[in-house]
Length: 450
Image (cartoon, rainbow, N blue to C red; front, side):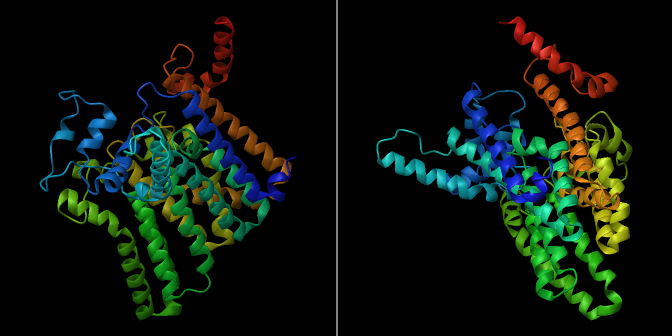
């Protein structure tokens, strides 16, 4: 059985995605929220952009916020919904990319509800119902599955099937990516997995035959990734490094042309966000959170990795293996390894420089989900270097996935109002030890209530 993923890698990834889709859809049916709302947190700000564009044909989000939050007027901390920007719009701090990605299934649901209405259905055709909101989560899971498949393809192109599939499954199921693939797929991280993965696969495919058309494609993919999460514009460092790496062979004129084409394509792909910013803020480029949001001279570099407050390695230690794998990756493929390290270091710095480097309420260092394909490459390189067998690779996956799933159980138990059974993951006991006790406490509570 341990060899199944190697024989059927695509089917294995698809099976995981189907399990996630079934689990998510089942949770919406059997455990609906009392207020009927599915979208919470950042996801709601993405969604209002989609709903307003389709049903109101504008970017005025006040009515969406009032409806989705169930506001009556005068509630605390809602002043921003009624204040307007200098251009007369309500601000929105989230990128537009996820809304664009969700739109096909959202429009399909809209068409279905409209046709059902013609046949006598009374389901409201207003873009607020649970079917409309669920389309965002289902699309997110599909994006996460597709992003995992793409990351696998990228790793396989360098190291073959065995290291690639085990690295992909391990990073997907034992890092923060799993949380944003099934529990909170309406956040921007699943779309980021897809877009960033698409860039890395495309770059690896054109690595040995660079053309202006290839750089245009890479630039466009960078722009698309930045639409999903603005920090993903860091991907532009990779084609820039590529151009510098081949500068002696190509010459300065060709290098300048490649950079110009790449930059122009990136700007064109990113233009939907610039249109939205121009409408909301009066400028094509903006920092909606304010200039103080980024503390460039005081990044929390150590805490970003090791703090119990959503540190990358303290919450998801499997990433340490990926980082260790950057060394054999550089050894085998110097340019690819250097690019992976550069992208990771830049992401680390940018994430650590954010004023809320812990990213609010999150399962681990969620902003590093943008590094998903890079972490897969690192772990695949390590497994390849160690000549890990199928059994060893499967055992590694089981160990790290078990650690993460136990922490997920603890985290979700706490977040669903049972701190008596599961403490918040912080401190030595809360982050490292409590997860092993929580299943037994849950079982005891369930037996005691029977």
